Image 1 (cartoon, helix red, strand yellow):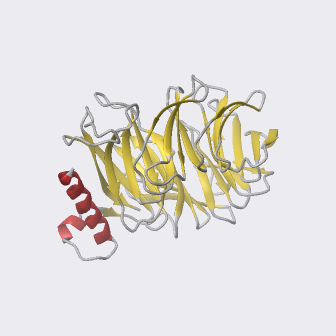
Image 2: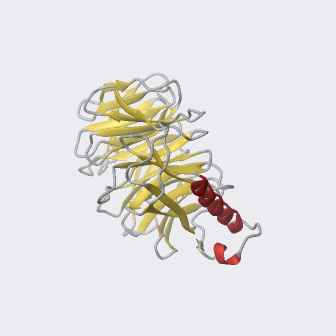
Image 3: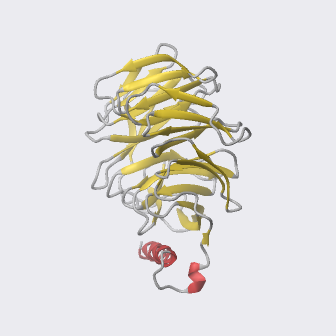
Length: 356
């Protein structure tokens, strides 16, 4: 573990060097600094294509960025409050953005800089946003306790359901399914059937505010995160067995703001990545909950959004230092998990490649 911690300290020093502190110029040159995507904090990031990401922030902008070439492609202006979530429909140029201005806007990268659809009806900030697998429906969730289902073509709200204290924090659609999963500040995880717009399952989460969730590509597992502390704050559930918790991921010291499944890689166990308000990113063995790697971004503030772009790249949004392109490589070190056992597949080396 001493060697592992030494590596992390070096990367931390490298990160601080990029913020203006003294450090070796050779080390600093290893991190590319591109044109910033946003002015201020970045709240959310997702993929539009293998080369393009979409992000939203406190500057009220929705930005399309070529993270491989380090250049901004488009900045959409339409919200009058900060952007809270962005999602894209796979295989298309459609972008959806939610905001504190209570609206959701739809954009098309190929149709100019004006939004092509507007979804209005929520009374408070919209935090949950998901597109159906067939690209016909949009699900939104808000702090106003409403979960809404919209027809994308007409922008009409087709279904609405209000549950007391269901202050929605995140929404995701289960792949190839009619089910929608949402997390809430009422410490509950709910599964909805989009055909009836009724709750079909509720997960008995711990007594923490649920902040985020993600569903595995095969639709079998759900990972959720919360504002737990002291090493708690992230759990894996089996969607095929109602209420069945598989493992807990223990290690972050503050709120886990984001949790995502990583794309499968040959010869590597299924993995989950998390980002936290403690300014760290961790990679876990999905099934054993062993921590396989940690990167601390000192000075970046809360790391609020995380998305895998391919099997070796992660994009991370931060409050203080914009967006980060992280490279993930399997290394020879043996990580230590909560059980103290070494990870059978080795550990992961995580480093900052670029900031923008």
